[in-house]
Length: 197
Image (tube, rainbow, N blue to C red; front, side):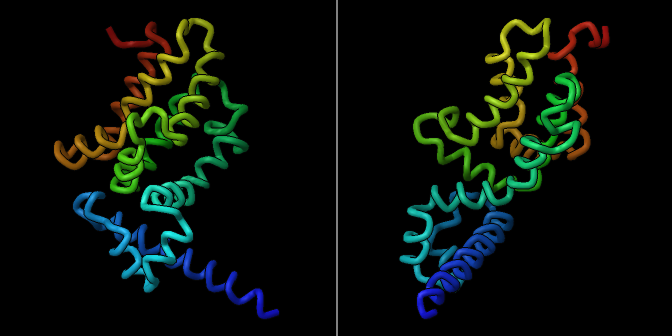
């Protein structure tokens, strides 16, 4: 029985750290301003606890991002249309992009922090590769599209966290307007014949 206590403490500490990090990223001016020391202090744990549990700041950001993203990931992998795998491609692609955009709008600083952890290239990050692979696979099912790989990259570029932050944070584009712009742009890419003349 005594062996269970450390695991309970570790689980409680982990939950406290993720909650504290979530609050700090949501309320910060810039994601770079959130340090491991800030998170440890807000969670009421020592810095050593953070490093043991998450390895480093990048590991903590990845863990928090994945926890926040889990409901969307589940909907994409096994949910019903329009996000789920049985949706027709022309319905699913806009839904995937809209879901990713809304997630980034709701988690702007966390998304910026994550995209800032990509090392030499954000396009080599695991989260980007997952979105790109999913989108490419759906685009490959659209007969008239000749380059699903490039099209997936181009569409994902429209929802990069730094662009979302620029449009919403600096140009003050309203959320619903941004979603409408993305939907219209995606429709033109997927079916140029449907574009207004």
